[in-house]
Image: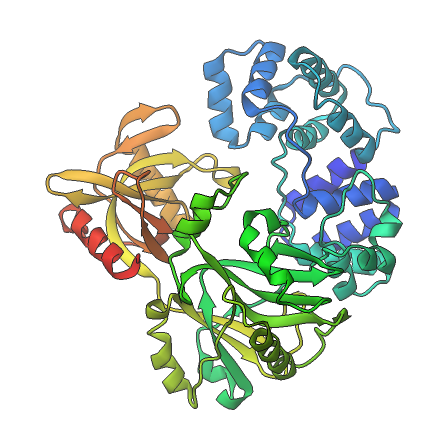
Length: 531
């Protein structure tokens, strides 16, 4: 456990990828096998069920420290993280931690507490608080809440495992995907080819892309295949041994979320894996992503949902055929096979994502401007000879998105950020004008430089009007251009609209509050781009 806490400290404070990689390689080379499995699980999103909620942890910490709630809240707003706040507030340990306790044994204890009454959970948690150092408490609190995030990419984890085990990174990336249980699977089995072959549902690591600004730098346009960049859920449809599985890019098995796809069992041959996009559509015409969100997160998808938000699968690659991994085939060869498969299937839920024909970069630039008319975010550019890589690899796949939609709004509410920004007001709410009123329409916390955030923070502290818990009402004087990828109608928002990926594009110091956009402007954008 101490080794794991030290690992988290290094990974959380280091800014150099190579330092993180070396630390992980050392950990995987020296840690117990069961601890290695849990580290892979935690860093790839396979968190255990949350044992206790934040309110209980806060309550127990105040009882242990005898701190009033107002003082705890002030400390929390300063630290910006509940797990860190509790770790800092608790007194030094009074009982020596058992030297032989491992990460895996602690996870076993946490999982065993799941069905225990609240008083037993409290005794369990406070006992461990008294045994642990500050760094160990921080990690323990993260494990309790299930909110375990650390600044390490999946690629870094894969590369560290590859160095520690001598297995290639591509194979490692494939083996740690899928539906495995860190409680039961041994490290040796997780790393083995046997386990991969035995899991019929196992997906492949997704091939990802980088953004490109200057397509002319890509060279001869004849070397590239262009496709629309769809705005849906990236997924893989797998048919093996008479079963069908659907995976999202986030490595979530979502078969039950899209029951209509079960009809593909009769249309697809066995031993096949397709890569593509889950998109709400009618007669092959993509619909706004916001419609798909009404089905995401639901435990049960009703007949009404199936009727109101019909989905299709826009296939744009094939990764496995007749049970064989064909990711090393060049794109053109995979595409030819994909076209044949989709044509033979002839299924209305399985559509071939079309290739966008062009002969010059100037011509493609013009075509790109029609992306939103086609229900797309822009274009994908793929080298015709490229293999299907695991993760991102510079040079083969690029995304060329259209410029975002923008609208000017005024800052009206502010809240402190988290982590290194926990002392600054960096989370903002913006409004547009509706007659003499201001109507909130978006929240954003990214897009400014550190210097700009500091300047805005200073303004907020001088110009706060009211306080509602952690939120400050601010004099409506600062104007910002808000950029976003899409817009949809929403009954949950006062403005009647919801924006997709809003962020601050720039601080409009040249504009006055009277010059911001209106609610009518938003509704016109909804009419143009939200249907």
